[in-house]
Length: 146
Image (cartoon, rainbow, N blue to C red; front, side, top):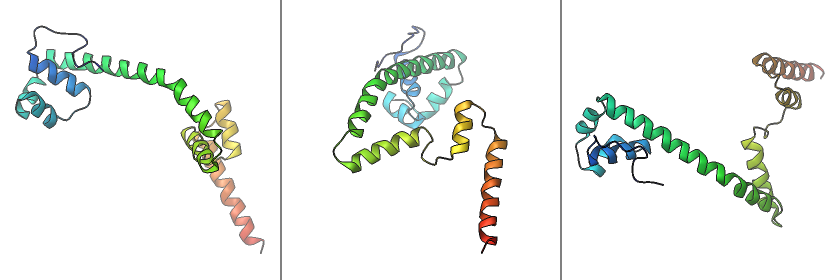
């Protein structure tokens, strides 16, 4: 990814521009200060400047937009890789790939009623509470049937 600010501001010093890029990428103040060659206090002072902060916000937004675009472009190859893993001759690999897909989609603990409600967009906290209460009643019924 680009090491320079996406929206360059000539009013900033080269160190400030570098600090903005590094902070937009999620580096800590301590690491940014070391990398830029200034004290942490200098970074905190820069962050009190509204123009510096605005540029930091803009840079962070642009960086995140770029990340989303790159992640989106990786979706198709990731799906192809999962499909290959699911068709592997090794059943352990197949199982792990399948469980990864199910976990990602919240289906590894499948409750048929809640799944149907989710699919219809009707799941509510109330339906979850009702499902828990139904399960509790089933357990009580099983215990008292002995």
